Length: 225
Image 1 (cartoon, rainbow, N blue to C red):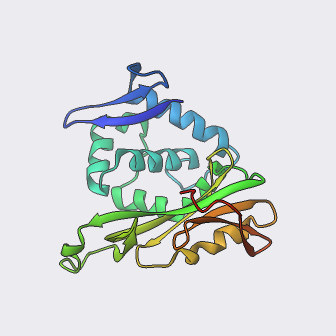
Image 2 (cartoon, rainbow, N blue to C red; image 1 turned 90 degrees about the vertical axis):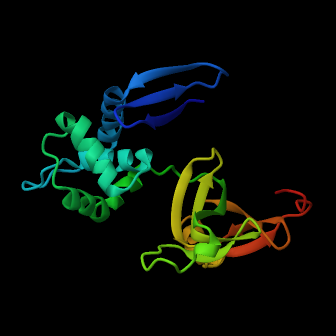
């Protein structure tokens, strides 16, 4: 297994490439990583044509969106980092607000990277805490809502992942933390003719299957978590 992670400082960024062997890692420059990432993205999106008036190719838009997600910072810090250090890689980079408008408009291009369904799969939700519950409502710009995750209250969002038998993401959705898990049943319905989906029932700590829109409890699995 290989893991990539961006490590940043005020002046530079490096990419840590961690192998499956303990205490073994190698480093590559961020330029090398961006180049490799663009190459992988372009392999999947090369068939999408570029609009005559668009400043960026679709592969460039998706690559920049992935970099924004990996960087893990806000819009302004990301754009400053990009224009300061790597503008040469994207010479036709648009203005900041237009770039993030492209991310929002063309997010469906990333669907091509989702994995194919398998006969067996699983689905679960994960809470993402954005602020401590005691700080709820203090800011008019608050994004998340208050809900329960892992048996405790959080203020934030909820991420739902549908995985195939190899642990690869087949589908995903997100909402605020106050929504019920059954809000994401539409993810299962999209693949109900292709997959047997295992899900955890929090109240009984059991696994159920979703086949043809019907839920059935699996026997002798109450100790699984």
